[in-house]
Each structure stands twice: as structure tokens, then as C-alpha cells.
Length: 374
Ligand SMILES: *[C@@H]1O[C@H](CO)[C@@H](O)[C@H](O)[C@H]1NC(C)=O
Ligand SMILES: *[C@@H]1O[C@H](CO)[C@@H](O)[C@H](O)[C@H]1NC(C)=O
Ligand SMILES: *[C@@H]1O[C@H](CO)[C@@H](O)[C@H](O)[C@H]1NC(C)=O
Image 1: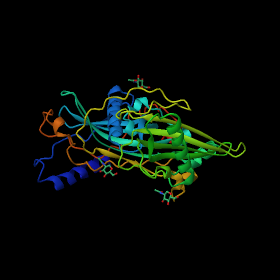
Image 2: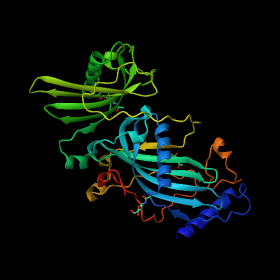
Image 3: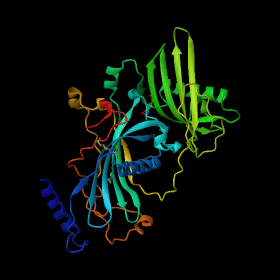
Image 4: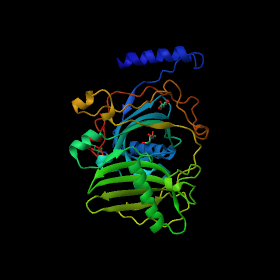
């Protein structure tokens, strides 16, 4: 069956590309050799790819490796090969604009996790010592609210990160006001964008918000949280507002963390809650920017119309599109291409669905079945 598919694929290739490729389709082996998911070369390739993914994003949070799911190598005669990598990721609490290394970012608590899967094409040329992530695509989705609720009825649950929501607005404006009054000396921080919001009943309704801030002076209407659109975000603040009805009192907490690349004006935050140790961000190499892929965000499975998977209590698979480059030579940018001796670059095949190495999937950092897609 696989062979048949491959032959028809070759047929397709020669008919579509007959005019471009040499008359004889090279007798390349369609065979993929599976690699162990705990192999150090595989982990290195995944690390490099994940750094690229995080570096490319303009919004959202840094993704961290949860487990390697599959690694298949395809060689086509030359010294070079293409690895087809599949790995699962978890969202961390570091914003992508912090440019931190994912290894220095902790994943979120289970009830607020966002999990997903990435696929990537990775070019390896051992003789020239080239390791190059050529393309990737990831799909992520939040943990099912329904499952979280069954497991932990009192856990905070996510609400839309929308500053027009009066409760979200209030939590942002009051926590930012507290920061500006008590911590930021001299300069003010201005609201830029809400990135996350959740709510929980404590002694009254509590709202937890995360939002990007810019440096002041803030534009007119800042008291109405008019976003400063033409400014660059300089940091991420995490705030909360708990309205205790019984005590007729409001509890506000706030902490802000500034991005490495930006000059910090305000002193490091006074964390009202314990914060992760701040490790230095890894210097990112200046990149010749080309789009290698996307991170797609899916809604909670509970919001889906078909209730099939909910009935079965099983996690639906996470679709990751990875096919646009099939049938073409692998893409390498000119500065990498010049180091490759062979005239023809290896071709890309459809992502292998074949048998994995017995050492795959590799061990998961967080092995909760609610976040491990099949
Ligand atoms: C990978 O896992 C296998 C099986 O658990 C183990 O025998 C092997 O030593 C591991 N290899 C590495 C490089 O960790
Ligand atoms: C945000 O909330 C307001 C009011 O509740 C609503 O009109 C608006 O469509 C929401 N924005 C988004 C992006 O959902
Ligand atoms: C990645 O996904 C996007 C759509 O989200 C698609 O346009 C693109 O071709 C995909 N990349 C690959 C290499 O398949």
C-alpha cells in the first residue's frame, strides 16, 4: 500500500515535473529510517527548530518541548538527509517578545495549559556540519475546559482576553494603576494589549489578567485603557483583582517583567506572587527573515459542534498541515545553500506515517493524558 502510494507519487512527480527534472527520475529510496526519540541528535534538531518557532512569533507565548513523538530520516544517496520531526509542545508563561530561550520558561499549571503538536523538516549535512530547520507548522489548543472542570471544579477558568469586558478592564486598569503608583518611579507604563484572562470565585469574583505594556507618556484616554498602538511593548504584566464582598474590600496584585531587548525604565517588579528565576535570554542570531511556518491556534474542543470525542472522552488528534513542500527540493536559504556541494538538493516527500522507533514517543515532561494528543 505504501509502496503503491509512493509509486503513484513518483508518477505524479514525473508527469508534473517532467520538463524541469532530469529525464530520469532519480532512483531515490523512499525509505524512512526511524530514529529513537531520546537520541541526542534528534533532541538537538528539535531544540533548534523550537528556538526558530519561538523567535518567529510576534504574539502569544513561548512554546516548550513536552515530548518528541517521531523522528524519521530520509536519505537520497548523497551525504545529506532530511529529518521529518514530530513533537508535542506546551505553552509557557513567557511572552514571545521576551525572546527568552524556551528552556528558561516554565509551563503553566495544568488547568490553564495550552498544548499542541509541531511538525518540521530539518536538513542535515554531516560533512559540511549543517543543521538547518527548513519548515515547520504547529497547531495548539487550550486544555478542555470541561475536563478541567471535572478534575478541579474550583480552578480558574479562561475568559476572553478582551479589554472591553468590564471585569477584565477593571482588573487591568486597577492592577496597572497600582504598579504605576507603587513601583514605577518617574515613568509610567501604559496599557497595550490583554494577552490572557481568567476568573475564579475566591471570597468573591477574582480576575487574573496578563497584558502587554508600553512606556509612558500614555496617550489621552489612557484611563479608558485606550491601547497605545504605535508604541512597542516593553514588558508583560500579570495582575489580579479580587473583590471580597464579605470584607467589602478589593485585593489587587501586580507584577511586571520587562523584555531583555528593551531598555528598562522601571525597576524590576515587586512580585506579589513568587516568580520564576530570571535567567539571561539567549542571544538570538540575526536572521534573514523568511517565513518557515506558522503556529495555528484552535479553540477548545468543547466548543466544537460534533460531540463525538467528548462522548468518547478521548483527546481528538491535533491536525498539523505539513505538505506544501512535498515533491519539491528542500528549501535552503542562499547563505546555507552555498555550503552544499551536491548539485541537487534532496526532495521532500509527504510526511511519513509509517512505523516509529520503539523508543518513540519519547518521555513526556508532563505526561497527563489530557494534554498528550494521540
Ligand atoms: C533511549 O531509551 C532507551 C530505552 O529506554 C535506552 O535504552 C537508551 O539508553 C536511551 N538512549 C539515550 C541516548 O538516552
Ligand atoms: C470584546 O468585547 C466587546 C464587548 O463585550 C465586544 O463587543 C467585542 O466584539 C469583543 N471583541 C472581541 C475581539 O471579541
Ligand atoms: C503550514 O501551514 C500553512 C497554513 O496554516 C500552509 O499555508 C503552509 O503551506 C504549511 N507549510 C507546510 C510546509 O506545509
